[in-house]
Image 1 (cartoon, rainbow, N blue to C red):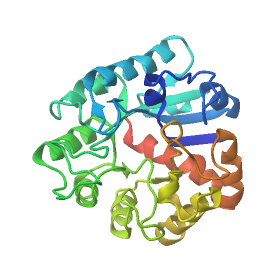
Image 2 (image 1 turned 90 degrees about the vertical axis):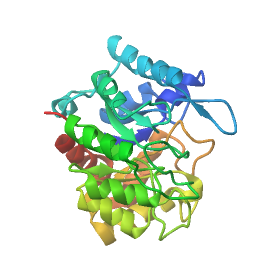
Image 3 (image 1 turned 180 degrees about the horizontal axis):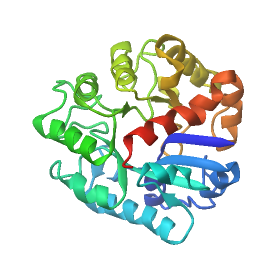
Image 4 (image 1 turned 30 degrees about the horizontal axis):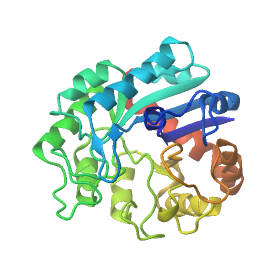
Length: 296
């Protein structure tokens, strides 16, 4: 089986002391390896504490070092260029969820050199770069945020608008010269939720040639089961084009999962529901975007 998962919270899982390599979570390196050809956007979520998280540079660095150590041990391949997507086995694309720990846009230079290839301007908190999906005053991208997008385009870092505010998403889609993605978001038309994308946001992403990773966050789904995930995929595919639908499980980042979708093995059940569109959603569409956007 081929799988391209746009969002797994591997860094956060490791920071919490859980075993990613052979553990019993929804996903693991062993489970991914058993599938065959796999690419995963492995997220750094640099959070500590409870309630209102602290998103710190120290935790960011710790999670980044973990990914690099997995590569050094020969367990994964870190994707740095489009050609690396053709390597066999488990391939990790390092992403950063939120810019809270960054001092300015030019931190992206050293992050890029360290292997980062996906960046989300926000998690659930407003930053100096952009307004988040929970913002009470949606100011969109700031000047620094626009510089972050420009620099990401220049380097070959993909912008992820999941967790961004509506105006931030529209601003990113308007100014980006490369495909924009939402690694783990669903459709507002099917379920009113602050994390979901409305039709105009989806259209903006589609115009850039990007993809939306439908996700398993229970509260964002029209029904709390694997059929709910398929329903979101069908809505986006039929209304905006199946070339723009992908999967972002959010495995390792949630306290609970929809019925019938709590383990990597359940991806095959989703594939059955997607029918003839399964190969594109679970592999080909995300692969196309990253082949285009990453350095060559």
